[in-house]
Amino acid sequence: CAVHSGLRRLHASLPIPSAMKRKRDEVMVGLVLLAAVVVGIGGTIWLARGGLSRGYTMYGRFPWGAGLKTGQGVLLAGVQIGFVDAVELVPDGTLGVTMQINKEYHIPKGSVATVDANGIFGDQLIAITAPIGVTTYLPPGDTIPAGKGAPRTGELLTKGDSIATDVRALTGKVRAEFVDSGGFRDTRKAINDLTKLVAQLSSVAAEQSKQLTQTQAALRKTLSSVDSSKVDSTVINLRATSANLEKLTRSLDSTRVAVNQVVAKVNSGPGTVGRLMNDPAVYARVDTLLMRLDSLTLDFKKNPRKYINLKIF
Image 1 (cartoon, rainbow, N blue to C red):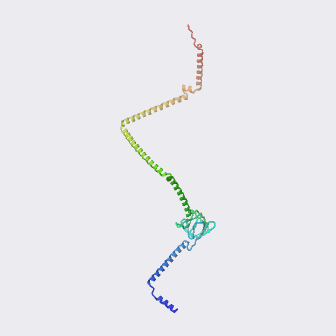
Image 2 (image 1 turned 90 degrees about the vertical axis):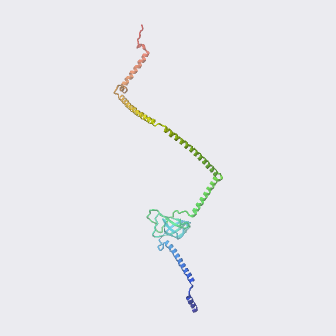
Image 3 (image 1 turned 180 degrees about the vertical axis):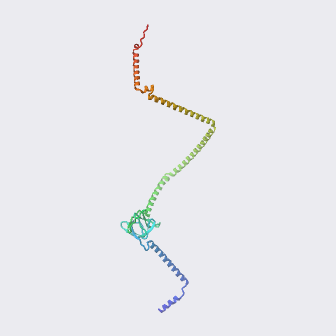
């Protein structure tokens, strides 16, 4: 033992090489950095889960296959307010989820919880959607109703498969219509015919434009050959005719007024004609007189000798 202790003191008193000392310092620095990283990650997770304050518990139920795990975030209107504390597999086809909510946040009544994707790497989170303007909150320990979440990857793949099937069917129909049955050839022919038609229409339009130009030139020539003095005299005659027509119209109006006055006087009955037309007694006498004249005429035709006595020597 005395020899062993003496050897230990001798070894300790010997100088340590610089290379070994440098290696030992590098190992110590690496261990310190590793410990700092571990402490930082652990502290971050610990703070994200509420730190010393555990908050309060809320519950939720989601269908199987939601992909929830312990430690995933709980968001309210896009703000993280807690994390998933536990996930329990229930035989009725649901997941019983326990959520730890920070005590400074409250969940409004009428809110719904859905499982949404967090990034593109398959991670999930619980998103709570709250109605606007609600000032009452769910009590701690209550269950947040589950809403309709975003479609999962399997559903998207299934929908993509159905879309791909429809695209393949459409491609097959297009190929059958345009390739197998000569649709492209007919289309090319129709395009050529349409090009010819456009060329013909262009030539017709050019010819019509040329004729229109000639017509405009002839019209300008005709208008330039018109004597302005004759046009002025014609306009003066038209004005005189219009004045004469206006005078004639006034004369006819005065005549119409006079005729109306005469008719009014006749209808009112102050004169002889008015009495004859409007007095029933006079009309009856005249009618009687006419009847007597008719009877006298008939009697005269039957017995003329009664009225004419002609004696000849």
